[in-house]
Length: 279
Image (cartoon, rainbow, N blue to C red):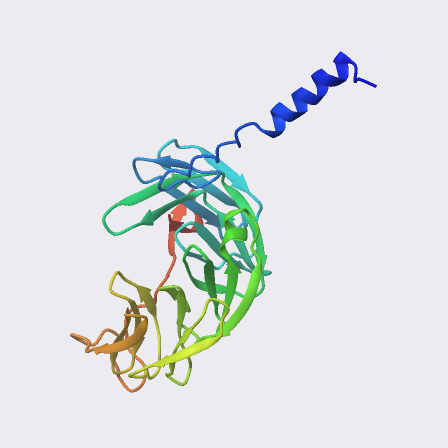
């Protein structure tokens, strides 16, 4: 029995579809593209402002003068930042705010971005410093621990801890060259992977560590006998002790000390003390 013309037409259509050219893959994302963000030609300066009296939190866009009110944080004591997120230390731990403003430095050029301003969750402990890279943010607390956060989840609006590493109180764990660098209370400086697992120890040690900074040359710790610069070369990490040019403060029997890192500034508005950290 011969198929009807209708069946023949349907069969031809199916054959034509099956033999058609495969769909072209989507074009690659342009250099610097970040989903959900707008790239700009200049820095998108925003100021996270917290009222120490009322707990009120707001973000001021310094370019548009727009003010966004966020959830209050009772008993705010300090603010730290990883360059995009603000970590507000208060009575109930640390509240995280996404300022929606950040930059990516490629060395020979810089990308500036702006995105939605929002609350991003809460963390246990009182944050005193924060540093981040594209994969992890390390939030160091007053009690000598650094909470590791999944950076993809954080940028999407959720502060999700993935681990914790011990650090000397007054210092911070710093993401650097796809690793974490942290100083212990005993002066040992460790290299860890992004999950917090130790992979190496840096020499020389850093006795009485206090203060941490990230520079283009590496991670710097303040030590009783000088500043320790930790740098990477051919996948190996090494330390270089840099003498202080003069005494800058004190502990350890007059040993020189750098000023504390990540110190928030307090200003007064309308008679109320507010703690503010520029973005």
